[in-house]
Image 1 (cartoon, rainbow, N blue to C red):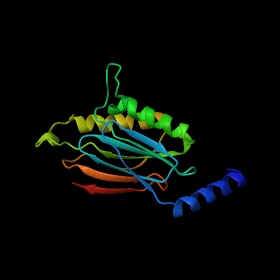
Image 2 (tube, rainbow, N blue to C red):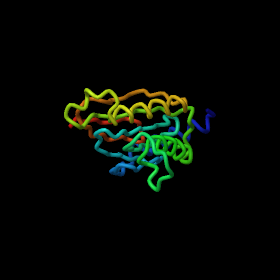
Image 3 (cartoon, helix red, strand yellow):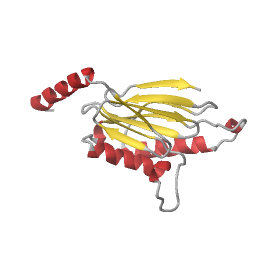
Image 4 (cartoon, one colour):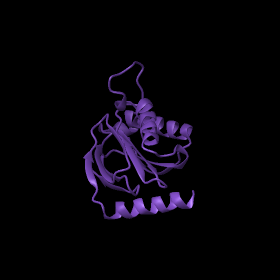
Length: 169
């Protein structure tokens, strides 16, 4: 990083520290990638949200997918992990992030059917598996996760600093 890039980054971080965050609610099948300070909120059961953050550029993004894969072309690619994760990475890069500097946090994947934890391959497990596989393939480290179990979660991802607030429901 050059001195000019470092100074620009420091100035953008100062601006972000005093600028209010906008607030966005992410519905299933949606995603966001932004350099604007944003608190991205969602509620998860068996769905997964992947939160990506480029710490050098202060760019963050998040998706909320429902199913691991689709076998057919779909008008709602964000609902499927196999498409939603690639789409999120591409959106982050379009905002100026670099894949080599991205870090991931993964949430959700609960078994929401009573007794569902006993099934070894419930939809939450399948969603967790696809997220792990695709992030590993992309070379993006998962630095935090809260997945599985039998209870939903509410999360708020702060795109300007990469932090996540989590509540178990």
